[in-house]
Length: 583
Image 1 (cartoon, helix red, strand yellow):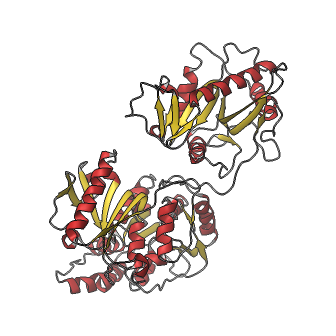
Image 2: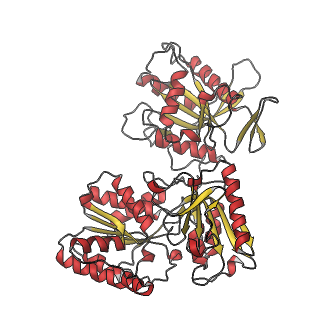
Image 3: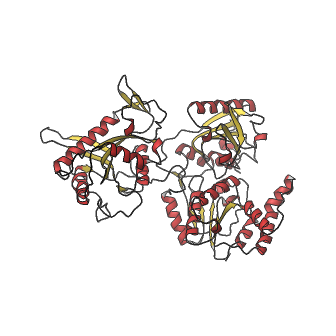
């Protein structure tokens, strides 16, 4: 095998037999992102790095030339990943992306309809080549029954409910079904490859394998352009932008974080709240939207921090809680106009009265979706701080989402950290809603692919209902779970095109509910206003009618940006989206 670049050494490179001081796998290259035309490889890299503990050493993109000294030409090969573990040995993983199919009659494998090589054969050949290279060195001559294992990864495909008669080696397939249990899956594959072996490689053997076999025989050059951010919302895994933002928040006690939809503002706000509680602060985490408030509360509860150290909720929940504690009546009037004035003005007056009676104060204020806050509410929130003039304050906002036309009069206006990288939506969806409001946004390399938003035109409410039902029926036939779908509207259900419709495609329609209340056979409907701050795999955005009060560019931006993977828009005939009112 020909000589490649060395593994990480004292000059910032990996010491394969070094101390185990990290949580995640030791990656080579250990970078924020991998350069590859394969989104599946990028996803696999992230999963291995995140889910394997540090006793695993992972090499990405291992290219080699192997010669037996007899053939006129050396044989070229490449392994997508090689994993080394002292107790489990070596594993070669061949990664294939897209939709995978196999025809046993023609013995043909395909990815998204295009012929590809047999991935099991590729993995086996690489494992045999690696075994041959190791045997030549004599590094493991004292180790009995050492054999390199081989596996295949389809990280974008689910195989649990797929007929696998043609897959004779299902146990060696790593699929999307294994997300969250990669450690267990890799361990099972490597153990199965050595049923009668009983060995533990020494530190010296591990070091020699990495320094004498892998780097000298394998091209480990960095193949990297761009950044890896996490794709689907996880409150535990932060994108690079968000990690830098947390450093910014630490250095700037009173500041703003501004970014478009999908850039991780809420994730960062929650993580910052957790860190402040861990540092000993008492934290007030506030938003406007009730469903988002439930998510914030659940995220804080999952951090196992004492609830006496934090409050997470909607502003009006805060007002009601403090009013009750102070013995003040919190009675919203029935009249709609009076109710609006009550929530805009009277609630803050009640909160200020309650603050005079209750000594509870907070060390830090964190406000998510700050563009939704009424200017009257800020003084009351500041009064809950132990020292309103110097207490920590972090304000997270997206001006494009200011659909309530609030005056953006924040108590802190600088410094500002700009979050720009979209780590929620696929690029086609992100590009759609950002272009609508005239914004520019970076999106995650990990998101990759995606489908263009589908626009349906309707001439009547009945036609729109039929279109929505047809799309829902098709999605369900394709195996989509109803829980992955939300129907968003510019109007309340009773005023929408679905008014009086009890079910679609045999599934009952219900308005937004808390997660534990939602039945498995229910299609959820919500106004886009109420769904602010939330997200869903598939969004059907209906009643795009150009109403200047409820269907501006910003309204469509809010609704469209809730979609992670698929977006359907139902637009009135003759209405051009670029001609919607600006605000």
